[in-house]
Length: 70
Image (tube, rainbow, N blue to C red):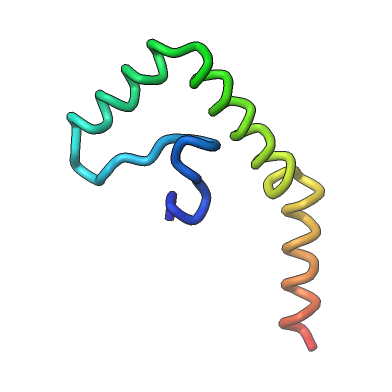
């Protein structure tokens, strides 16, 4: 789930499920701080480049299919 992909405050923000108040606070926090917004955007892009580019995902699938076909 999201906890395995997002490090809250580093590359995104996590809030408890069904907690509209917490979600609202997180959104307001980011919208009121350009510095926090930039840090989260930069962290998210670094995470994407490390784990989710087409080359990376293709490599993971290829390794998986190689492993299960043996």
